[in-house]
Length: 366
Image 1 (cartoon, helix red, strand yellow):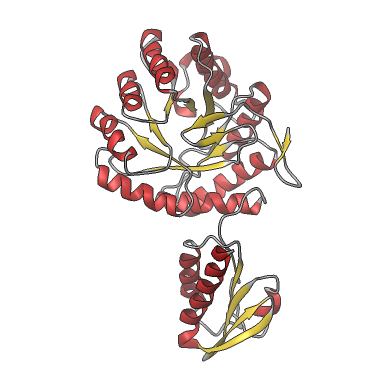
Image 2 (cartoon, one colour):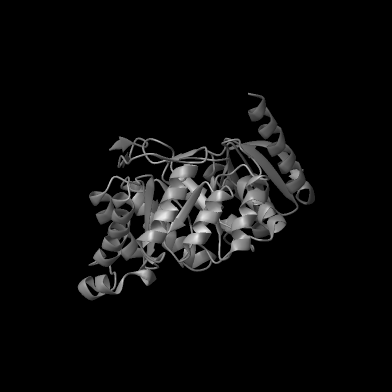
């Protein structure tokens, strides 16, 4: 175990390299996402990857459903700087073609590629191109014999999921391949927790953690944060994706907030905002949204508050580096709980964003 911060002892795992991003060992826990564009549409895919990188994505995965998508990886790679992972199902030829065109990692289920001869082709290509393999198993893709023995994965018995993953890892090891990370995905929060706990005790390969098919913004954020928050706090997990039925940029934003909440890693400012009450005399929701949108472009590790009450707001957010509190016709900008500037309500957002810009520039200047 290694200490991630003052509270968390992280399970020590082997380290692999995905492009220039290390995964496992003492490397930082990395945040990844997956594009939802047609991979063969290079322009749209590259544009989305650039937006994802802008909000902090560190590894990006693309779907490879056909040979056109596999061949497009070369053009995509030429225009991005994030390590690119190819997601393959069933077709060994697509895995090989993806690596030949520059994929820096692949995600497969070795058992469904059509037999050991085809798996050997994938392993040979991975070794030739120095590409790690993620063995990714989902609850919906478990072998029938394991389901018959262990039943469908549940919090009480996730063994079918775990044994499927380890069986597929053994296939790679049999052919002398060990540059591996593992994921076992369930859409059930408690099954995810119990499954990764047990898997972590059985292997030292790095783990990609996540809840699959978690749902939309609210349900998906809650389910993923509960499962991944518990696992990360227990020191389990080397890289993760928050899976949402949403723009993938939201996945990355939630991921960073999760790491911040656990005091594992931070990126950019932290937003504190009040839930509003009867004392609020300003339309706070759009104000908070505009501030939050601007904060996504910043890197300075500030604590920023948006409060609805000029009477109690500054005191309630006294630990904030800077904040605003709205009142009827007038608002205030405060720093560390003390009034810094009074501003007419209609100018409040503009003046506040200007102050944030100044603080960002000061931070970048050192």
